[in-house]
Length: 396
Image 1 (cartoon, one colour):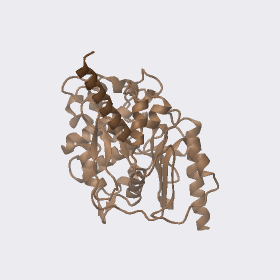
Image 2 (image 1 turned 90 degrees about the vertical axis):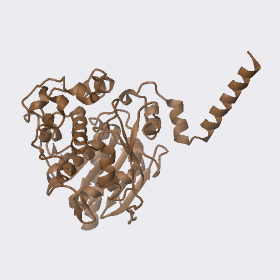
Image 3 (image 1 turned 45 degrees about the vertical axis):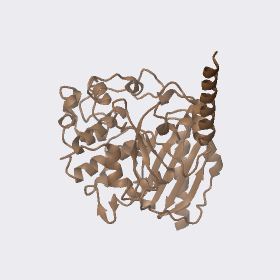
Image 4 (image 1 turned 120 degrees about the vertical axis):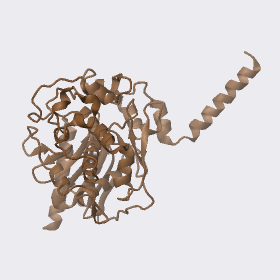
């Protein structure tokens, strides 16, 4: 081997080593665990531990769009520690929690971190983003871009004309009652939610639209509730088509900047460049908690409502029966009969909001399994109740 080739290789190795050493710990961890499969559903726990905090910083895996914050930050004051009849550290270890912030009466009552995560990092939301996307529908109606949730979906997404979505309204997408056949099994590589990530779209067409327009109907529109991430992706395409804006820019313009989020967020993009609106907003845990405050404050910023009257009240109350006593589904929100509601994402992400107690619980995690139907899901519900009981005890 010639001396110049040896010299070139030596220089290249030195550059790589320099770059690696000067990367932060999160990026070094990700590079060590870097998966070749871009389908997050089938990553190992170690890959997810690394990827959930860094995925928007690795464009070779997936591209993202920034959700810019402004210069004016809504500060979060610290209140007295919440006295819980539960071991919080043990709970967080069991949940494999990366972060949790509890806000009560506008002040932080508890803030903890795990998995070597901290307040300056961003963690992916998964389906917590669904509740953000549905809110952008309400804002677009308030802004005059969308006439009504009773409008047909294909009136806004022309590539859906002639498909089963000709009979589906925006309201039926929001409540997941389209009647369209779908499989949301996160552990089945042949399910729709897995295959959607692998779909090769028709040239010139959004990837979600390209996949969804070929689906079949299993029930009349409006007659059956079935959870479908793909349909939230359609909601996002619809909002962008109606407003002429990206979801990232619209979220930044309407909420992230004026409400005073502390850090830029990001939104992962699909293969055709549109935000994956059923998933994947990366943000700091404190900014997820601020989103909870936005809803507690009825979507008002500086006294001005940016949503139609009663939007939040309707969106966060039971609009569809999910077959579970005491619970329901609103406009991309999980609802409880006591008036509380939650945004939820696979692997343990969540924002729980209880207006009656002026309470927000924002949490991020990396559960060993994606599904909500695990003991960890029940454990988290029990934790929510424990927080409610602690607040009630303070008031008695």
